Image 1 (tube, rainbow over the protein chains, first blue to last red):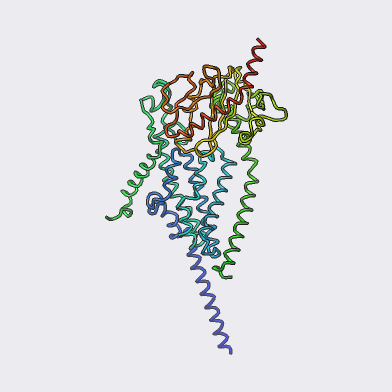
Image 2 (tube, helix red, strand yellow):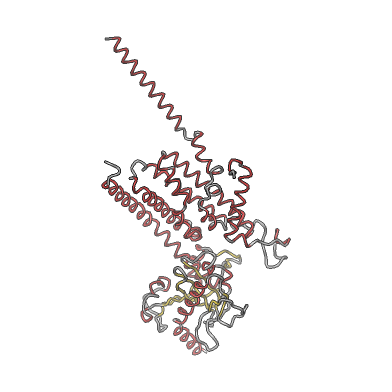
Amino acid sequence: MSEQKKDIKTKEEKKKEEMIFFLSKSEEKEAFLSKANRKLLTDPLDDNNPITVQVLGICSALAITVQLKPAIVMTVAVIFVMAMGNVVISLLRNLIPNRIRIIVQLVVVASLVIVVDQVLKAFLYDVSKQLSIFIGLIITNCIIMGRLEAFALGNKPWKSFLDGVGNAAGYGVILIIVAFFRELLGSGKLLGFEVLGHKGLTLADSTGLYALGYENNGFFLLSPMALIVVGLVIWYQRSRNRKLIEEN
Amino acid sequence: MDKNSNAYTFIFAVGMVIVVAVVLSFLATSLKPMQDKNVKQEKMQNILNTFVGDSLLVDGKKVLLTRELASEKFDQYIVNQYALNHKGENVDGKEAFNIKLANEIKKPVEEQVFPLYEANYEGTNYYVIPLRGSGLWDAIWGYVALKEDLNTIEGVIFDHKGETAGLGAEITTDWFQESFEEEKIKNDQGDIVGVEVKKGYSGGKDKSDNQVNAISGATITGDGVTKMMKERLTKYKPFFQKKKNSKLAIR
């Protein structure tokens, strides 16, 4: 009897040990910024950038990169919508009926976009006017639906959150780079400040570079220039990151 | 419950819609006062913009006319608000600022109320008339400030709901709006014709031909502006006539 009891005890102990081992292992897996999780965040910034590598979300990249400020606001809005959308879909992933999953994704994204739109209208009215229809267009941003369908439906919330933030940031980085060059070269300003000096009506009125006869390049204000700048960014990125070069 | 069954799918869809509806309507209602305030301040800013410009002098310093500043200064510069009927008489019990032009325009002319703002800035009188019409995709609107002769334009402001960026949306740009300055709204015969947005305009800076240069690629929006100006301004003819008569009487 006593031997049997001992046996049982050891079995229980073994089980406990196993449990603890398993728990600690799973905890290790869940470390907030483990290597795998960090990769989720950083991969879309370079190796798997939504704009320059996957060539998604180009339309909005053309439309709102004339100035830096709307580009930054758009980035923040997309980060919010994408991270929240990913988390919500990930939390619901075991509840969503398979047949209407795309509709559910649409509803989630659309409601988040309305939230952003309403909040901007109340607190950042000028920005909301400038972004006007582009905020609505976040709904159709291919990156968002793509990440919901490809990642959030099959992964846990924290990972989905990181994936959302990562991809939105990857999108935003390109947006901001393009907007930086377009605003600087197109209107000689950054965030509305005249960084290259003030352009007066005559050379004598002008200061900074304009006093030397510098002129803004109006072409940068038009959308074709956004494509060209994106192209240059892709060129630069691939010259640095050899992994991205396809073999012909 | 079987997740692929019709019943589950149906229940899930209904539940989702209810939750989303409650959250969104709560948000929309709670943010509405702030949004309305922004819209109201913007209207004041637009009205002042037509005769003040982008910035105004406060204590001898040039200050950008922001929405907040506009709402502070509005009552100071707008000395009179009229709500006119089609005979040019002031209608009691209506305030010009609260008239929704979008609703008025749908009514027959006899029932419409026409808002008009009388302004005084730096000792000069201006009359600001709100405009509303349609562009290519959706509504366009604006304000035009007339000088005391009720013929020469001091300045205009245009805005739109959904015109194409880079084409129709260019009506909000300074260069387009500035081309209206000093234009006349009456032709040589003294009839109100507004200002035509003309394609292939060759008049340069001619300010007496009732025409300005159009935006390339935005013909329909431009025609909308032309139509809007003519349609709205002619409605104020009785009022203009009265003003003229009363001035003659004073002399």
